[in-house]
Image (spheres, rainbow, N blue to C red):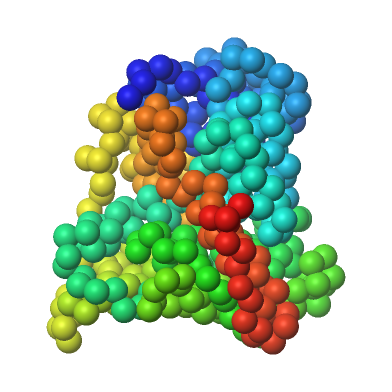
Length: 370
């Protein structure tokens, strides 16, 4: 394992600012540069965190030969283009979800990773949340027995978010529920069938041509007897924010709490019991362990919408950073790597296509053959 420090550049400083102090404290990282189109805000953040390299032009940042990796936290429609530009400029890439908005973009990123030999990781928060790590530990210890079925949901009200979210097809932002059902058994989705239900406000429909209030998708796993169901809503559906997953095993099953901050439930046979989910900071280097419960967006006057609604993403941020940096240092693939990220992302993209076609079964591309 290399003890080299990797020069990191963070792109997008809304949600992205959360990661600055984590990289600054990690022994494998040098928090080298930041990029934000708003010069005044970029310089303000640079000054606050003691970062000298401040860019307002992403293309100019990519010309800097000292940058080893970029961490992209920009609007979803920019992810694919910015990831591809970075890979072509010789930079490793960590990118917030989703990987892309089309199957073709996902294929292009997978192909570019194969061509360059660089590292790509989609920074999916749920699969590094304390809830997921708790269930993963149970599974790896054999406590669940054989997994029989998985279910996940991500329900959210997007009113008040930036305009590009308005009318977005629910499944186009589905990685928070697709990710955990594929990640626990380390499975690959083979095909999907999805139904849309209900109707959003008429003024929200024209931007993406998507009428559905809720989309619910069945996923068939490749080379497995397993299937999963995921549900997604974004507008006009009454529900407290929820990122959840349930896992049904032959010995024990785990069900996410129905109300945020209440206890989840473990069923042993037919006997239920409530369980308090522990934190998993002990899995992290000491210098970043505190970031599972504290970060930039903790004060009442300093809150990002993803934290107000997302409850801090389950303490996942330092785990994501640690996985990405360790993968670079160990010269191994992170989880999820480019192919796995493409499979997770394309479940949602093709699920919406299926919903628009009345539930048609659609096969996913086999990215292992790319």
